[in-house]
Image (tube, rainbow, N blue to C red; front, side, top):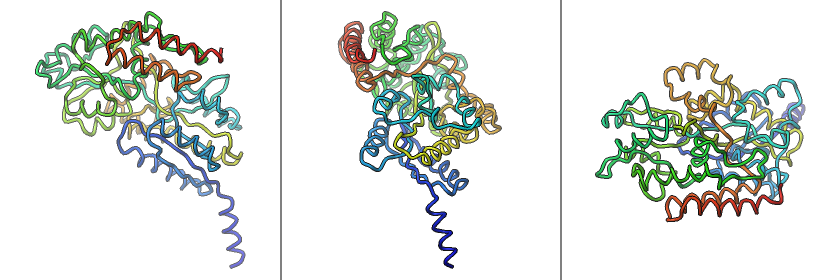
Length: 413
């Protein structure tokens, strides 16, 4: 009896406990899916306990994880915005994965992800974030509405010009259906990053020290976004809410919406009409920023905790679980190997929209991320909303945003 108790106490003492915060940005029952994957991990790893905490949206997750670090009860890992990388490095909060992996197998795993999804996770010669719930912006469209308007439902718009032409046919004069909607709240800088990439210009340099907000191509992209409502009248005037756009699409108040591929499975389950998913149109080339959340490991963790966190992250990003996560949500399977699993291969064959976001990675760029990310991003968000919902010109607001961003980034150059 005494020996049994001593053995039990030894096993309990050997357990490593992990706390992980994660966000949900697109709604739906994603917390149950995360809980299920974590439960599978714990079954296979009885020496590791995981407390997975749903923390709200991306901003909430960052605030709660960093508050826990300062409170003395830190988390060991978290899923946070891929664009948080510079702030987390500056706060000395995270450790590079290069400093945690040790075996050849672990080093190979670190190189297994789609390169486009790694752009926001690498800087200063190291990998600080590993992709998990990653997305691109895709174009959802109502095929029934296309047919009713005399449009080819199997050939959605491929250029800005075709988008405007289709939008005019799809917009009903009684106001019951708009041609298209692009959300201008929530993450407007993200949507704008797609328009600027399509127009041949990215928003920042690769070192996070310079922005290009008043580049003529960027100004032109904002003029086009504004013209969709003001000039072409294919989109409602004023703000279009990120949080309610999916509902508007499902209620057929708009025939086209641009939104995260993370909405795909929910749209599939709830659409009462025939719908399609396509890459975003180009001008002339296609383009989208990647988006979503990466895994980070916090520096204050012990070596044992870092190893256990790495084990959990490897499990959750394994081809099998990346495939499961992609099918359950619509997020991109984060590695080519995920799309070679029997399950995701058959799913994508039976439901081709499941592969659109992955295929669009060929035209993707990094999401806006710089030092002082939150402040720089707010400058751009405020400028976009002042032009789209207010009366200011794109040149005026973007010149101002660029001047302020330059000041903020001056110490980092």
